[in-house]
Image (tube, rainbow, N blue to C red; front, side, top):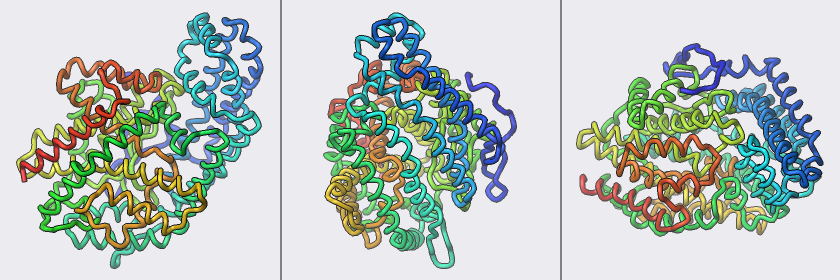
Length: 606
């Protein structure tokens, strides 16, 4: 199994309260004051300065294909070295702040490093601008003349894609240098939610703890959590709305200067996905609301003895019985056994994360909610973060993030530039990993357990597909309204209720207080229009699962090739070996039909 060299072999440490693993970041640096951080940044800056010496030479070499090819290879190598040297420190700042959001020293380090990286990177801005002065045929001739330069073809493809949206060198530098200041709004959003406490009786809960109670078996516990969370979000909504408005306006200005036709266009470009494909997917999902979410929640309401579910019952267990709780050891075995069904390599790569202190699973005060896998850089190993509570969803979350991590290790031989995968494909490995675990759980389940598992799988699908497309539509409506001026809090709330009401259907009652639940969705602030990638990935995986079912042996090598390809291929190229065309609305309808099949199977059991 190929992993990065020079890794420590120390064993994972456990949180004293939960006995769950916590990561050890000393593989990166000993702490915020480690002198190696400054040394790595200095080395990265040196590579950028070497790169800057090439300014003007690309255009000068346009009549000499061999010289141009050598310059392209030299530029790609220097740019990647700079990414690797500075990327470790930037990743360390992100990881350290994730588990200690209230630590002012770490917050300052993250802010300062971001500013420093932006200032250093400004000297490399000329590169894409100068390369985009060249014609396609000139670059193609250069790659033909210099074989080693051909590895950078996917990188050049991305650079060329931004050609119509580039600004002058001075404006590009201005945009880059002001990014750290703009990023403080995201920091304000994160720190506001981290400091927020949800009051429920005598309890004072974090956001993550309150959200977990919305899945409690007892209706009174769910309602109390929902009421408390609504009150906390209302108190903080003015700040969170201002953050959302400000960043949307910042984006609006940049989009106008860069001549993007709509607010989602820059995300489509970054994802290397067609607007038509995203629109086809969103339309297919929207047309399936009645057959999916509306139908399922009507069934669930009947099971729970209600004509209409309160919004806090949306993720309620089907019975009052205490739900099965999984230990960390149980979750680990389930995930590894499931991964092994794709071949030993997948399980071995995942096993390494359990053997090493690369997972932080213990929920605790000051730690961010949610979960992620951070690739760091291609010459280092990834880290996985989640908040493990022992319920079924957290077992699937563990599989999801380890799916990302395995994907990231498979991409490492490509180097940091080419390993970077568009979001539309990046979610494929994670959702596929969840699917493997679900199959494993169902295969050994009793009838009652199977009902619960099917319901959970359906609800996860509705959250990944229906809910995320509803989020996407909310963003479309919000950004459209922002073009007319600042969007007032009550208007944001109204947009939220409109799109969520459409997606959830008449069986869900959007009680008073639900109108502010948009306020904790961090993707709206950190990554505008990111959310459709979840639906894209989920529906894509539905199709891949069908391909695997048809011929498991033939599927595995093709799937490994897809993951190991990182960002070297567009999504259309990557999926061609499977005979799939995501530009066709019928393709997305097929994914929706698979989810509908699960609902039919569930209805037959109840």
